[in-house]
Length: 118
Image 1 (cartoon, rainbow, N blue to C red):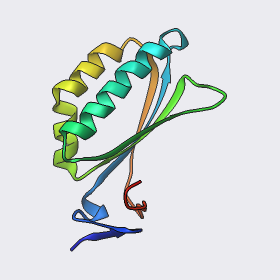
Image 2 (image 1 turned 120 degrees about the vertical axis):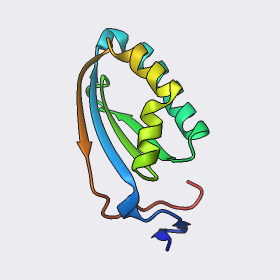
Image 3 (image 1 turned 180 degrees about the vertical axis):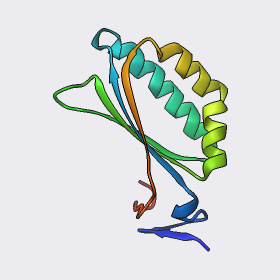
Image 4 (image 1 turned 60 degrees about the horizontal axis):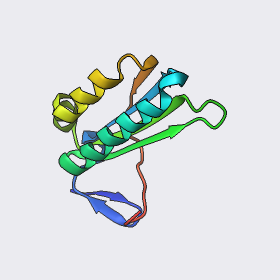
């Protein structure tokens, strides 16, 4: 049975999807380097991994070194595959000294809505 989102039908019900939220504080002196590394990793993830449904990253307006990530994976296996991928391991190695703090939140999807093609 498909999961119905606004304007789209997806094959994976929300109960099987893994949704993670991460809040990171980056060393301001290394912010540009961090952003370059995370953009590369995110682009590789959605291009190479079919189980990565979406990864979003935003920065706080008044504190641009505080980043928030919203990640959606098809299931737990897709998430495990993601964190084992070469591009994710490269990101971790490259950025570990840039990250001042990290808070990871595991969630239970309630409703995930999007418009087709956006």
